[in-house]
Length: 299
Image (cartoon, rainbow, N blue to C red; front, side, top):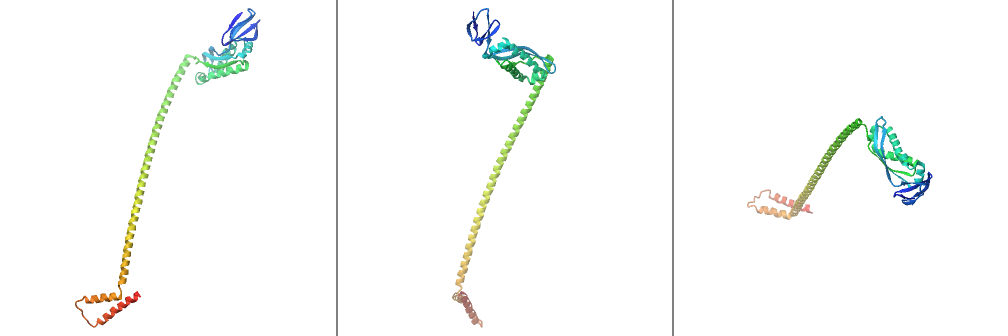
């Protein structure tokens, strides 16, 4: 009898109620009618949807997960072993029933706040790990790819309380964010003020250094002018001293006995009247003595 195995599946057979180890690939195949029973088993990715999973939280509140999706795959080389142990409905044992068990175990050890809000984002990964751990131990051919858990339905009174709490939480977050923005703006203004103050201080420092440099330059210039003035005055004083010394030397050279006698004679002859008394000889003698004194000084 001709039968068809669809793409993404393998054909499995029972003969006399016993599962045969032989499997077939996609395509047309022959089997004995009545004696051999046939079924196709999917070996590609498939999504099993587990619906209406009720559970009770640690505080006793009953909630319901409307839909949980489990993406899984049965490995081709484990088809015979898996079907031999758990049958064609292997996924009921290791996915549908297992999800109910793991969800109830999780809810019973956590509060409604944790299940519904605090730890809800962790449920997907926790369910995946729990399913894969048991499948690896007991049904290694089943691969759990991912688990997607929808938000559970909770009693209306509890839901209203949570909505109110969420609204208050949102208000708090908005207030915190507003405070953060205000603090950030204040910090920005403060930084701008500090930057402006630093800039002004830097400019003041530069101006002060410039003034100090100008004063230092003026001081050095004044010192140079003072030094030049002192050098000039010293040169003038040296010149005057040199001139006086030279004049003194010249005068000293002029004070000879002959010169003095000449000047004495000129002084006498310049007088229109000369009176001679008893002092005339002594005056002449004194003049000769003075000439002899200068002469001895020269020698």
